[in-house]
Image (tube, rainbow, N blue to C red; front, side):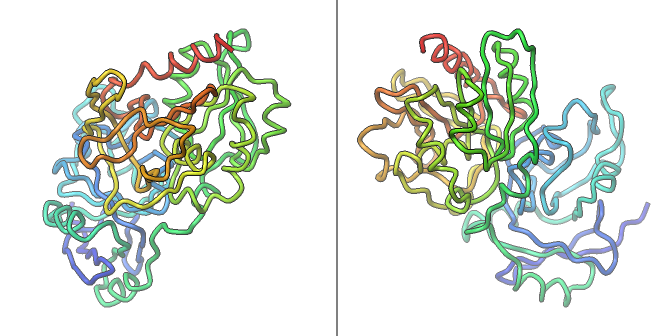
Length: 361
């Protein structure tokens, strides 16, 4: 099967030639912020992670799609990313679990993409200059013009695009713990980990007030992962601040950043973010190094963490804050993904720490 030619143009004018895949049709131009992911597998979980809303995902691993796709590996109902970029898209699937090909998946879910480009050159460029907006399509002149107008993620409330519109429940009604989970873009594997730890989870929209949460009489509150700039999710940090001391709180990824802001810390954008399943993180109290799965462009700025909180984890690649714990209050968070979908399970113990907090209180 012959694929149509296509180009990817970054906002600084850097151009890559390739072939159109997925929903990238003639005359169409797709835009988004380009970030690279270093995971060797788990492309379906990555594509269906709501945290990628507003972004195009460039895979550093060269061969993508070889084991196909299946319903069990979806992290949400559909992909929220703006596009996908890869070196080589497999034409067939080799796994017995596969119910379809990645190519068909991209078409089914209307995800535009480009293959056949030099992803090594792209990654090295993004490492040097940082994540940036881009455009892809068939007509280079049209794509180049669109790349100059493409938006990044700064100051945009992307959580509003991915959060649930109505509350829903997951897990056994007889479970020992009731957890209210703020949906900033929650992944299904997080819900599986929470229910496996003995929780019934009531998932609520990101705009839910602290009083509405407490009215549900939860044993704990969970702050989920999600996309984009935490400073743009207006009003949420104030609601989380009102919950501190009232009920145990556990946050992951964007939830960690929002907890940090609720404590008075500042969040800033990294140059190219952390996206992959192989990031080393040091647990400060034990000195243990954990290999973690990560997906974020923003971090809690270390020198703004208030005196009432401790940094519990540190990223060994760049020294950024990877975990917080509030002194005297049952609340903690991590920047990485202990549910590990995809990725290593080194940090899975954090779900047990959450249930231990709820047991004590």
